[in-house]
Image (cartoon, rainbow over all chains, first blue to last red; front, side):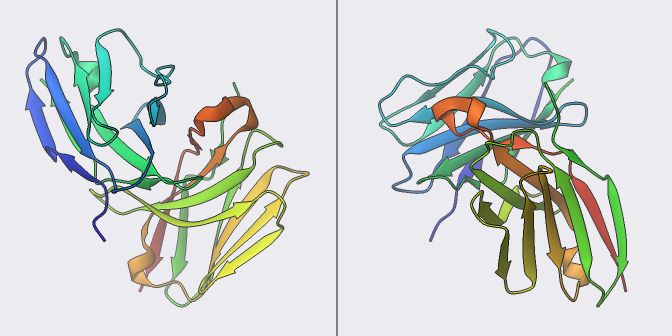
Length: 111
Length: 114
């Protein structure tokens, strides 16, 4: 079946611009996660959605980062006023239980 | 806090066995995982083990778990050039609460020489 998909695969933006990253989880998976992978910090958790519960935003690095999940399916991660340190690969994962399945990621480059 | 630790690099010859080691942080972690990442790709779930198990075998992959030492290893038998990738161990620590967020190791780059 179809896996987790993310778009765009690559995004180049100028410092100070806003960006939106999209994640389409595997159908039927109730949990959705965003992680960030960067050279300096490795793989780090950003935010977690589970059904209709309030999201766990404890991993978001600043208030410039926000995310939403509409209808329990598609999720959008928004970064406002991007900075160069936001350059990273943003990975989305969905989960039916205790296993997480990752998408291919969005590589964000902030110039 | 503590880090999940892995050696950075492992080089093996094609056909040999590879053993990738990981030391995790939380002895109460319920689930432990191995992911594979090829260049420019996302993370592929290879295998996982429950904390009440000592060993799990899945085709060429064998996972060993030593809870006392918080040590996890992944053995790849008959390593092939297609196994060249970065391998991440990950845990879901008990202290993470209900979120089940993964805490990842630093990754081990496996290079398979033909």
